[in-house]
Length: 155
Length: 176
Image 1 (tube, one colour):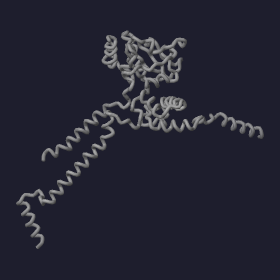
Image 2: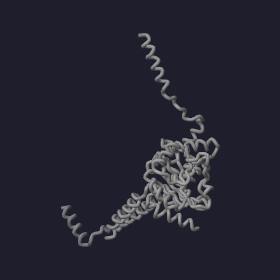
Image 3: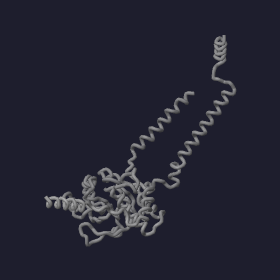
């Protein structure tokens, strides 16, 4: 019985030895911190709605490896961004740069808002002036009928 | 007065046009910034003769087709007969880049279905692929005599794309 118990213990010990040791996320937490900050601003090209920081796609792993290398070489954020943009285009950036081809993208919502505000303003003024002058859009005959009906109601 | 009723109809029309265009766009086709830029330089070993190297410099003065593939890539199998056809036509050198692959797996594919490539460069860790902005295999590049990328095809090359776009472009570039 004793031996059986010892065997069981040995087996249990083996079990935990088989499981892989958790790999450290990074050998240098400062590099990793910067890597996360940069890659969160970038799109993974394989799963396009995921950031490069969060994606588990093979390409994202490789790109994170490359970026880690660039950070260790002491490249600036702009140089790293350029590394990505020169290969994959502005599409990798979640915040597209302001340039002629993206003017509509950046200014469009404000333009639409401006159109809306102007339209609202024009509409309110027109309505205001209509109320002010008393024109209700009725013909004379109709106005007379309204008045007649109102008088009838007062009685 | 009547024109007022047409406004919603016009807005609806515009919306339909936007949706129709949007539905036809493939979000996976990201335009490459490398078009009309010099093909990134690299020097890697060849797949079949690891003692030999390949660099795009070796093909300066020639128009060539650079095809990124891998043994694990399913769409490449679909593309394979089209590449075999291209190789038969002898229009231009076809260089393969075996991307993130194991040599023995790649050999298996070539043995089973034939080898359309004149040279195959081996990119085991995917670094060359990254320089070329590869994000999904297969991808193909037409590179001109000066070593400039003139065209990128994303996804498997179809017979139609080969006949209508790639071959005419190659013939044009050969003249210049």
